[in-house]
Length: 123
Image (cartoon, rainbow, N blue to C red; front, top):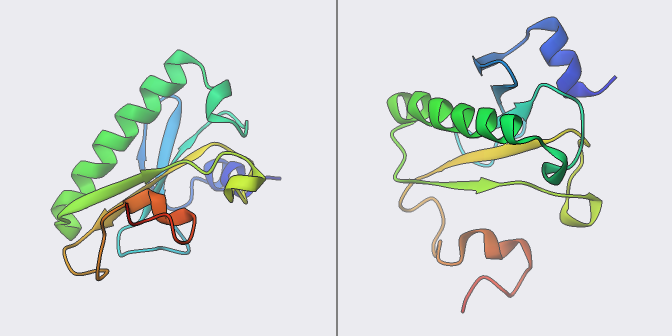
């Protein structure tokens, strides 16, 4: 069984939930408070999500962000979806990374998600 489906079935570590999505803290966080917003239905691709699922994921991102704002007080966020194995997706169940960022957590944050390809962050 999928690790995310197991968490949902066992009701473990859920920090936010709505009808079609839920959120947990990432077990391998990039920064303190790194959260994952996960579809309840098991499927891998963001592009296969229904309009209702996209809406629910967006609602979960906003609500989870409110929790992170209160607890971690970040200066910004990175949002990301690794879509497919070539893009680094390791759990084939749709999930969106919500990564709190603070000034000074890296020397030069410019380029943000562009840094997934070494040498492409600066432009």
